[in-house]
Length: 157
Length: 269
Image 1 (cartoon, chains in turn red, green):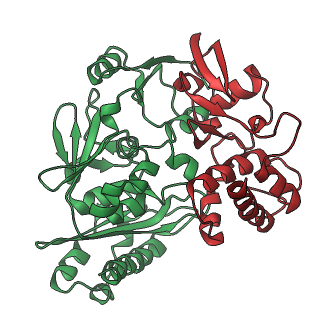
Image 2: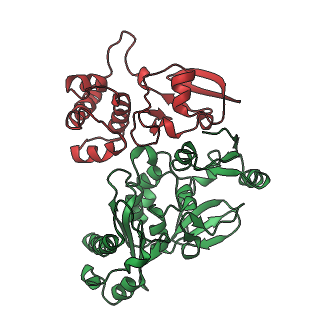
Image 3: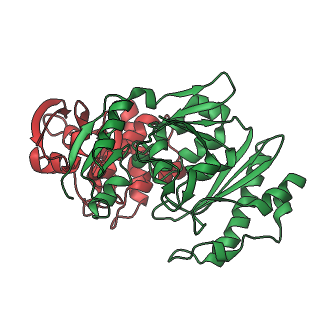
């Protein structure tokens, strides 16, 4: 077992894990933050996207022990204390950007990282940026709409 | 995934020592290929030696000799966004910005990509066309001597890629016909034109991995334009066939993508 300290959603966490523990398993099984999903486990689908030191990564493709000292943000950190949604979450709800909701945590985390990086969101560029995130029910039209609206709301935030 | 020992090397010599003393140990760069491979049971290292604590491996610098030096642990997103790379070698920044997807680009590295030497990876074509030099902890290796075959490089067991030195070539571009799911190249073509020569390197298609298309290079040295390669294609016998594309289709794609890449260089002037 390997000792590990990191910051998850603003809280310091110290624990011991096996070297082979994936970041997504640390988040879901050890910390019980089950909003981050495992869709494929083969690095294709992006349902497990979290922010690692502010950048989007697939947490199924990162070792937990490689994150010692790092900062992780998951979907659970987005909503306010009274349950008010983050502007990007609200935009997904308003634009029907989800149906079954399985891909949504990864989509929302990806959307926020794209919105923070870019001043202006061009829908065709946005589709290119969404290549690492698969949705198998809603389709992408409303997801793209939601991200454009959510990014705008974040700016006004 | 089978369990393994985990080390975070604090110096390059410590990393060398750790892989030297354990035959089953592997280096861990960004892990974007290695971890999925381990999950499938296709790689079962006894130990991983992580290189992420070595900040000297992530620098991107414009050297006095006009070369651009990119550290082995620079991730694709950093190469794509680097002002220095965008100014000096914009075609390379563009290539890095089209590798896999944004999450992989935030983690995957230049050194990891070339050391893994996937036959459909993007960087090897750029290094070969640009005549880049791979620096390791022991020596410097010309790209032409580095890429040996499928997942095979000139690296010795205890050798670690530290950086890649790219000549600054104004006329350079990379064009990729991607697999729409994986974003790996079904065919990727890198074209570099210097005062002395034209080099064309092809990834994704060769049965032995990345290769130079010398027949096209000879034609393009005479006359640099997309029409110069009309009517020629690499021999399909040296190309691979798989579920995504036959060797004959790849041969045709190589001509088409090379012509498009040349056209993009000319259009940028």
